[in-house]
Image (tube, rainbow, N blue to C red; front, side):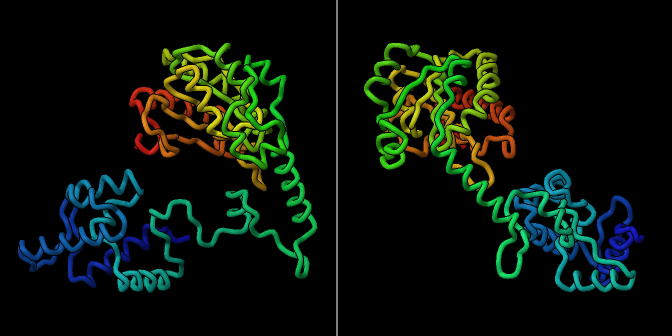
Length: 348
């Protein structure tokens, strides 16, 4: 089998010959044998522009040839000696293809393509996505196993919407239960506005049981998938608590809202006067998972609050952002929000 580096070497030499330049000696840039200093500078300027056009970035160009090589090797993985000649032109690409044909092999993809395999087999691509791709057919219909899998996933999603927070899970983690203004799940789904505020009884509970002046108030809400909370909270909450305590932060008593939406947790944080709200909420279930949980981190001590002031970490589940890893990310976001006294779009 021919080594792709041999192809690269031949292509480079032919390209240099085509451009009327000579191959560089070690430590010396390539240039025309008869070119004066002005011509060399012009060539370098043109090559720097080609590098910029290929997506290497203007910062590398501005910092000079050495910076361009550093940015390429550390950022996109481009070999510095290839970048020294700039992005290949259409003519150079055609020439490279001819050389590959002469050598009886395919033209190797550029190194910055990474793991992309244009000729990857079906199993290679299907193993890298949960999407329903390449499911096949039986005549003009889906195959039976495809239909059954779809129906099972759809049923799991519907069940997640109607699921309830586990009383055992809340008790185990010493979480105080609350309810929104929606009297049941059906009204919660039909009246989103009622899910955004606490019931009168729950507001009184927060006033009575909540800890005043905490830095972080953790709230759990079922949202559109209590199943997501039941599965992920036991994995996320202990790690999250440990990280926040390690940072020396004061954490209030935990609350969980049944039939609650994101804004409902704001009322809890404002009632106890917390600096920052950390909400763990069940996300809208999909056809590949009904157990995805999100985290909304909101710095509360602001004027003129709007939804853009929330920071969000989503897709927390065993097939997405692993819960234990997600807990570390949530904690880091809480710590940063308190340090900068802002969250959301303003945090950058």
